[in-house]
Length: 474
View (cartoon, rainbow, N blue to C red):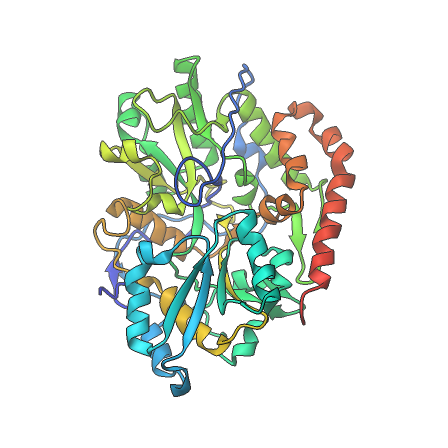
């Protein structure tokens, strides 16, 4: 096993860059949905540099291609296992997931953990969707609670059936544990789920393009622009604008239904969490600027929500966005373009070199311990090994579909700031998110009025979230 994260290696290190756009769609992963949004119009694309937030900034620098030593976010999972209490040996933990990890790249890692610790890992698979979301409550109620489960967002309706991670007695203070994820899954200062900062279960939005198409139309390579710190929203709109002008059937960038990614790339989420309660502010000026940017460019066909026209021989959409599962070798996303050797990827554009960079997370993955778990003390040791990126053989094309895709993923994983859109999952789970995402079908001039008319629905939805938070076991 190549322990790549414990050694030095050459990667493209980005000091800062802004990523956004994302969602779940097409025909891979857990099976998200996409919708058709073939809007036409002649509106001029908005210059994104006109809508920038001039808050505290990280300068986007050039890529460092020198060999580097990983920082203190790295975890020595072997050392963690060496400290595992002897009484945990030959015990069992049950792991609830929406797919069988023994059918994927995780199989080898789980088997190595079992061999090293003597702990048997039993997998419980529940289909993603209502069955999975409702299975936790049912398992707890019937006395069959798993020891650990995977979560894609901090749903209060699920957190209420979890225990604080502190029940394990394990020390999670190391920076290797993702403090942003823990904060998202915390209630009154207690974390109910965690992840590793450097983990193969890190799902940022990533943009994909066809290298042959870019060459044929003499467009600059987005990844080369990225490495020079020049991959901005302005440059994206410029390239897409030229593409759209060349053919009335063409559209620029397919933006999936979930994830207000231009806003996320600026660190903006209109559904905020302070560690105790959720609140919304639909009058936030920065948010409205980004939404106007999205609407104007959708009207101009620079943005679309149709994912069906990218991965085919008659390509009419220039860019596609997907979560990071699409860079894995086992993924079915964009397989036709990949098979032709023409698929390349790049982080979502920044809002400018002097703007704060946020990596938009399409899913805020974390792992929690349910109430009445039978072996909670073994869970941290399992997670330390299972989530440790260095335990996965990611060299070549065994894990990632190309070395370039691996470089992009590792760069994103090492970037400082991450942004998760609470609204895209939490309000959707309680029935209110669609009432806001429909803004994408609104005329830009009517956006403010449209939001005012729906504010009461959103407020009612947030109240339901907070009711579930009040039921979380303290």
